[in-house]
Image 1 (spheres, rainbow, N blue to C red):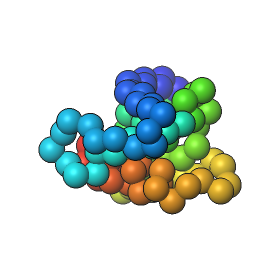
Image 2 (cartoon, rainbow, N blue to C red):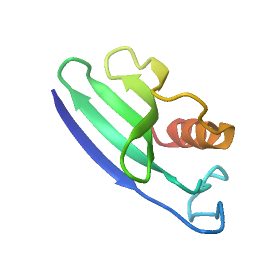
Image 3 (cartoon, helix red, strand yellow):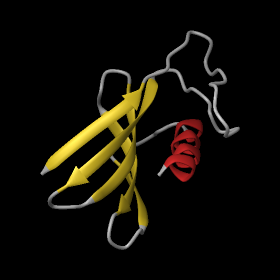
Length: 95
């Protein structure tokens, strides 16, 4: 399976800050980053991934290329709600 990742990492000692963009959902959650990933192989599609700053994946919104169905997968427990809300808002805007 080929997996391409492209992303941006925002961190700030101030908790969250606004980021330039057209969506009001462009927040930054300290300790987390969002990655856009493209999957080819076992599953074909695009994903918006929520990772810890150290690269450990926390959650994803995956869009199947064929069906266009979007699903959410969590890989950890006790993820802050604002981090999940950030993931969902950015996935809705960018996938």
